[in-house]
Picture 1 (cartoon, rainbow, N blue to C red):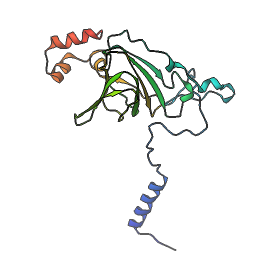
Picture 2 (picture 1 turned 180 degrees about the vertical axis):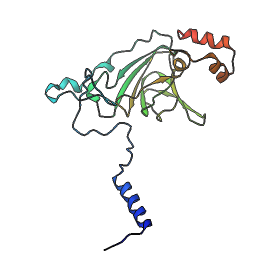
Picture 3 (picture 1 turned 90 degrees about the vertical axis):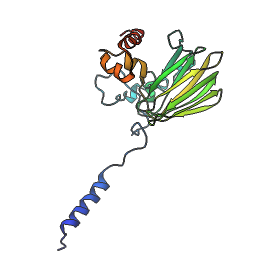
Picture 4 (picture 1 turned 180 degrees about the horizontal axis):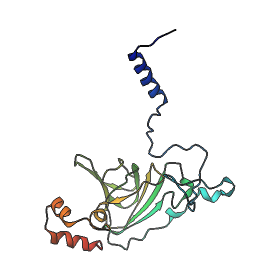
Length: 222
């Protein structure tokens, strides 16, 4: 009978762990296990996503979406209107790991600094002139003014922005490698939370007086 030493057992165990442990996927969302899984947005139960609508209730309309054909409302403090084309507005994207947004900018409009925690973003300018930039974790800014037909990419999770630097309105289409990339806007995340972040934290973080913090919070209804 073959006998194994203690070290051989340890090596065998490590090999078995490597064989049976799945390697991490390079995609953000899990790979689909069927042709499609149209999201049932009304389901009572969901686990890290949406369950599938029964195939018998799926129609061709589930795979088409015209929301990005409509211009967004830019009459707000930032001068931007974003139309979402994610799984919550387009259920046919469920489990496919992609989504798209439309962003309309008034002259001078800005998409304020924000992050997408679950996706890399790529986009193409359709109309106008946009300053696009992102900040690395080493606090390096990469930015460029783009015009119609030019593309950009924002690595996953990094703070980024777009600013209309032209004299006319601008239009941007962006895509994500996630059905629901999520968004965290930096200004409201810091100054418009419920309950509010204590002033003691913000005054020390920004090295300003409490009156400055209160004034900024008032802009976001805090």
